[in-house]
Length: 169
Ligand SMILES: CC(C)(COP(=O)(O)OP(=O)(O)OC[C@H]1O[C@@H](n2cnc3c(N)ncnc32)[C@H](O)[C@@H]1OP(=O)(O)O)[C@@H](O)C(=O)NCCC(=O)NCCS
Image (cartoon, rainbow, N blue to C red; front, side, top):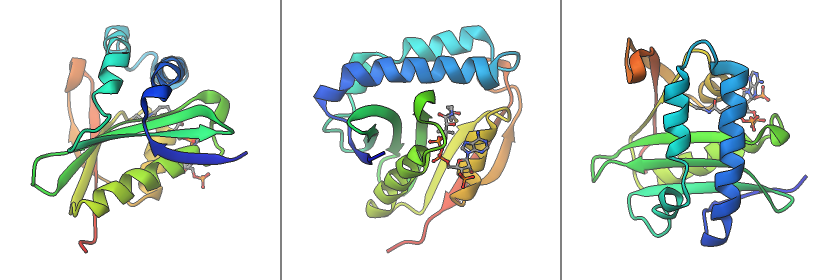
């Protein structure tokens, strides 16, 4: 399988929204149900719109990369750098279940970390849920460490704040 990663383009948007809705629903059913409220999941799904995806195209301080597997949208990662602070956040990563465990998540992570490094960031952080074991493994494999435990955060749910400090060029 040929996996490539590149910035989101207009022609990807429809397929990306569809693939991410399926990926998030799979994630909810597989790992989050019983931990993450359905209202929170539905709110997240409501943000997965063509309009919101389109905002990333040409943005100066945020990015969205898509992974294509043999030409099909297989995954997506998005993030943002906060002004000139050198601090970045990964906002969302998901891989469609048809493409799990084929190295797509790792390639998306490589692209995001490459982006933050190129922009001179010294630190990258993200929020995750304790139940998302594949994601936590992926983050730890890439040098992220748990920096804080966020009790009763978003929708009253506990989150883990994970960070990686980058070598500055
Ligand atoms: C997390 C996720 C993006 C990983 O994508 P993927 O393409 O399957 O991951 P890769 O094949 O690139 O694997 C990279 C590493 O991730 C970890 N990993 C991936 N799937 C895993 C699983 N089922 N169980 C345990 N660890 C897993 C491993 O550390 C793996 O490295 P290894 O193969 O050397 O063990 C994917 O599982 C996903 O979309 N999950 C649902 C959405 C989600 O949790 N997003 C994060 C929100 S904070």
